[in-house]
Length: 444
Ligand code: SF4
Image (cartoon, rainbow, N blue to C red; front, side):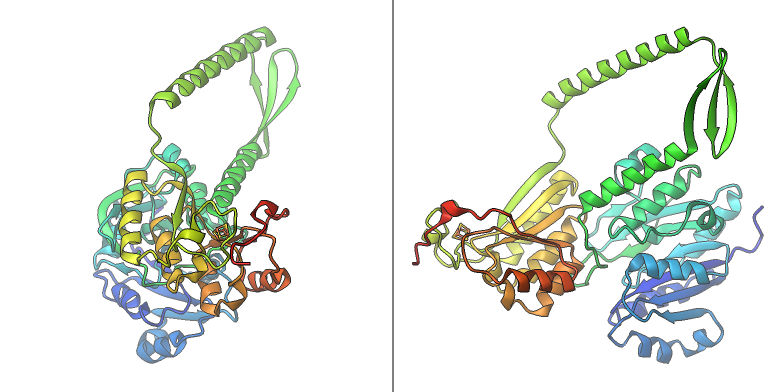
């Protein structure tokens, strides 16, 4: 039953965004529909966020239009949003990130749609990204399982779903929005509002929310979760009598009538035959249809190297000192993102020695901006790792960049590097066996 008055609790997690949070907050305060509260969960910001909010929004804090809560340390977006969900006092929940801006009619449009569709518990709309692209299309659960096309910033749901399907999964470090949307929409097909209602900032000037495990792993975890969920719903027990089979759905045992085991066996055979046929067709299809994604891309940021191994296959010992420029890199990545629909499995930023590039951080941010779901790594001989500034480690963590040390037979302070990576929550791989064949450096 929908109440006539629709009230929204809008949850805004934030971390060190004092330079842009005002715009986001004002975009909400300037809505044409005013029945809402804004819950800002400050995820342990070290900048001026707290002072800014206390000074500029004194009135709203007093009349509880804005609720501000600061967590004592940075705990990630899931924890921040979950805290917001706990504090939410209204029935309809929305999410606004502190670098995005709602269009003025955002809440009014959702309110109208909620009143028009009183049975529905979930609604979503389109977003306009700062690079000019638009995201959002009609709902299809199967294609949602392949990849997310619903942005959390335009996803509005009834609070009752939180109790039923859970909050954001704090065990996941990436694709947390997708995971929640999959759970919530499984049995509640959402209404798609064919309007752009949010300006989404995907420019690389802004730091992105902390990610610290690879996207592929996150995808696997999400799919595993879905399987478990299905098993819980349909735990089929093979307890036959002659004419019945007992299945358990949501913990309730149901006895269903079956014709005969022979018939079931025959049906199974047909089913298997069908699957086999489909598999053969797919194999055939794979041969002739070009892939719309790439498995692996290698990009050389620096031509030369500080090691000059005799066995170098990158020609670094022969190369002149040269660095890739960020404009060329952005242009190429932009084209690659267009061609592959941002579906690239792995990108390796390498060289020569990539750590020699004075603007390496910008390249990492740019790559993550264009390929949010790709496993991105910096491949280095490791010599310069102990000289990297804190900014480098922060950049790796915030953009979910993996560091891979190539493993040449050189003396490296591996303990120092491992500790540094660990304390900064950055993923690091070191091969167990060193590449002895690269033995003598030409520089020796
Ligand atoms: S460290 Fe790697 S890139 Fe550098 S010279 Fe040796 S093989 Fe080439």
